Image 1 (cartoon, each protein chain N blue to C red):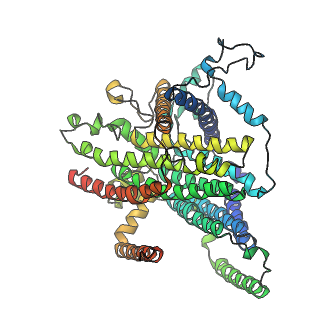
Image 2: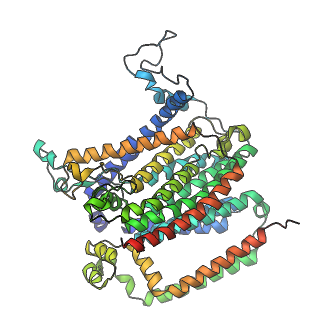
Image 3: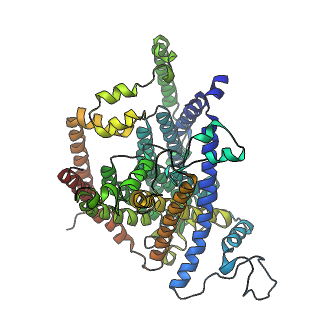
Length: 406
Length: 187
């Protein structure tokens, strides 16, 4: 046992724990809450309504009008009130359900959604050596901390693998509820997710061929130095810095196809409109979570939004340069391994989060713009269009890579 | 990986593997198999085989077992739930398992490799990098990281190209067969 305790790298463990708490609990969970708020406000703007604009601190004025607030401008504390409502509502378990699986299902939806965050690089690296100036000292301070929880060599594959476990939660919820609507919703959702997983996996093959790497932090570092995949305007991506070599710009064609397939499949994977057939109100009441109430329902809800945030994070990392600041080498804001100042590390985190928020707004915008698909059209789109297109795209990328000798 | 984690995941795998057989409810059996697969993936990862471990989850736990569960739920199989276990099959199964265990024990007791740990035989990255021909793998090895996904791909396509083609043909035949069987007659 002694040798086991010696083998543990304490600094690494503490750094990992801090990163997990920061990214999963202090970034993603509040983002989940506020993307629900954002969804309601943006849908209100799109439909020419007002939306939730009144919740502020104090939460109640006993019937007096709350037109002016000191805190909580424009209903910013709405997520807090929603959370409180979910916690205080009655947690009703219908008598006809299969109790064990009924309780298990919401957790199986939520946990994989948060686990996939482990491989997403949310910043370059953080230099903590300035802490020595204020009296803290230790060997661990002098090595900058990489801002990714697990720097795996199989990044995107890990995300897909863990995300595919989330299907079990939905299947179990639909089955254990013992109700027709739930069951149909669960069956629809799982067949949809299995179908689009294939298109999703194949759509990033060209991207991985171009980078020649599966490590998400290395992919982001490469984009920081050589131009984003969808925006190659500096470094090796720009023809004017690279002897007028247009190879990377020719690759924009397959990359753009990849990006479209990836984004649309991501909508289907997260059960978001226009692909929200599993919870299609007009046919299925609320789909697989019809029989759920209170916090268990909230877990499904949060799982959907967490999956959406992680999906946006993955899309941003693969196609839009992750934490990289646009035109970084020209501005002198690029990442230098081991020598990035602390303020630049923080700026990289802010840049990543800003890109993710933009992507989430795009998700929401699409939901309130497009009508829902018909189910057979959805399956046809996945199997007959995206699957073949993704396969052809792989061959096109290979041909272009060979022709331009990249 | 520290030894306690190895024992934890091995136990997890074995217990849920046993539950696959013991459980009378088909859904419970299928889910136990999923947990068992996840434990197996963790063991692969403990051997630095991240790629195989991830593929284990992606293919078996994430795709194959979902389809199994799907079929169990759609057909609503309940015949197994009330049936008593066949005593002859149980005794035979246990006897086979015991014979296998004895054989495994007799082989392992003579094998000296069990006394070595991974720390005793470190990977010589620089030597491996010198003989490596592909640039990306070479760069990874020089940084003392194991590019396992790339190495798997290189081995498969350089050493076993014929076998890969053969498996591709077999899968194609299977796909064509499935399409033919599931296609409805129009007239």
